[in-house]
Length: 256
Image 1 (cartoon, rainbow, N blue to C red):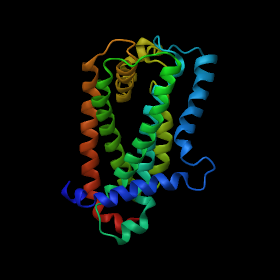
Image 2 (image 1 turned 90 degrees about the vertical axis):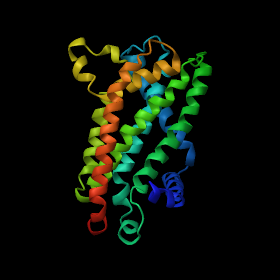
Image 3 (image 1 turned 120 degrees about the vertical axis):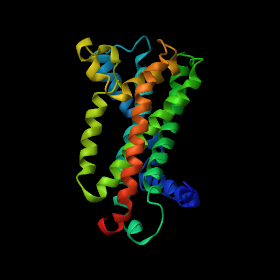
């Protein structure tokens, strides 16, 4: 951690460059931070809300879906960009001595900033739908910390392995698409048949997304015990991620 602290300026510059590069030479620029989740919301409202009439646990469907979109945008953005972060900076990795963990961390923070800005639209949508925030809104903080732990562990593992096995990035893309379908982003977990629930609940994001919605919108019952499983998964993934990154980092320069 002390080494990372000494390179905090580098981390800041990497985050800033990542944000700038993603919207450079685009017509709408940084407005894509809001445009992308709104386009996704429109698709979900049309397909799941209008066509399939998916239940939304008593919450107006646009609010239900957008709360999932904001969380998922952080998960997918952090893991996908984090997995490619070291390989995409091959020149810097090969010639500059610095803690390479700053690369996936910068990608994670960049995704977090994008999702935080997109969450502002959630507030606007709640006003439009006349839905007040839950008094338990503060409980989002520990839930988001658990989510960040899960995401950081996976990003560290992916970024380290992608240096040596270039198809890891492709596997991450496919895995994120499958994971999206197995996570209650655009549909309520209540639609899952009881016989599949034990298997479905292996996904740690199920409890995270369900708890987050109740903490934000106040519809449903909060079950703090449901967070123990994703918390344990997050700690284990983070420990594995740090271990994998540490043992592979000395070989990055010769492999990128």
